[in-house]
Length: 165
Length: 165
DNA sequence: TTACCTGCAAAAAATTTGCATGCAT
DNA sequence: ATGCATGCAAATTTTTTGCAGGTAA
Image (cartoon, rainbow over all chains, first blue to last red; front, side):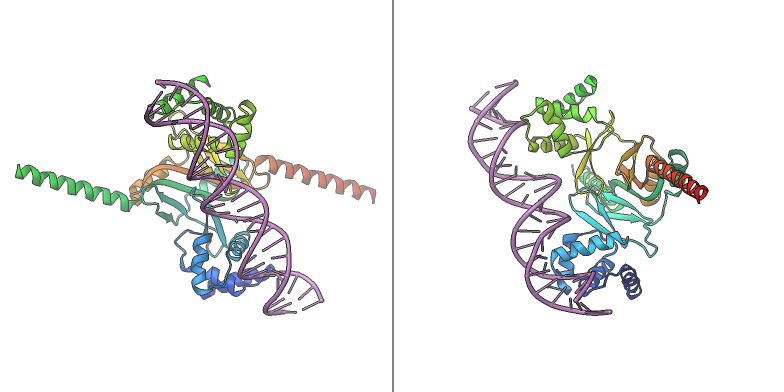
């Protein structure tokens, strides 16, 4: 944690930016919620707990800055708000998203399945890939299991009823 | 074209919606610009040419409706506006996007490269895929060629200068 | 100092909603 | 007449910007 903050601090300083207390608090919130996909408003409210006098605009400006430095990635899952994902130490993101249309959860797959597709693109389409994004919409394992459990339950119920009648 | 309008009309009527002149004009604009990725505002301005008294809210409502019926897909490319993509006749979209970070062009690849990944997801992650989205950010062939041409030009220029001196 | 940073408030941009009216069945 | 649809304007939501003051090298 401290090491990653240090690294981000260096990155900022290389470009003559400062890691101000507000920026550090923002980065800490992002690190502490790395698996979530927080909106600017989410980040703002979490930062406010530690740093009540911060303004929303500062959070926006910080996220914008971190986005330019490729420390975070600005994403849109189609719900009208931008969400921010921390990138890994090499400023790469090798994950894909599994978006559950039932419960809204966003899970991640930490593998990169697209390397050979990127090569294919360079070769066949003359497109130089700098980054990619892969999202799947569907039903997550938890919702599937819940549904299966319900179906089992219904089945048992009807068995009981059959026995009764 | 007329056949596809007819199909959409049927889809609407199945759900007790009407294909009003405003809605038809909107759908026609989408069909005529199928390869583009129009924003609501874009659609509004194009529809206004044929149907000057239409309101922006109606366009939004129509796009929302078409989106619910899976006639169009609402997409976000991260520039703050929602864009709308017509789906094919089976309400599937088998395309991926090539987004040029230089000129902003959005090209499409009309193949589906993810079928075996979707199988893998079902198998290994117990995730039921309903839809997916694959975008690549990078530099398109046109910008690459332009850059290459410029480099050739620079090279020739310096040769001339070398000859002169 | 100088240039960066901040909070606040106002502005801008995108989208949604309320409402009176219109139109088809 | 009933209920869906519309245009307009107002409201909401998300994000950006202007500005006056603060701060650290």
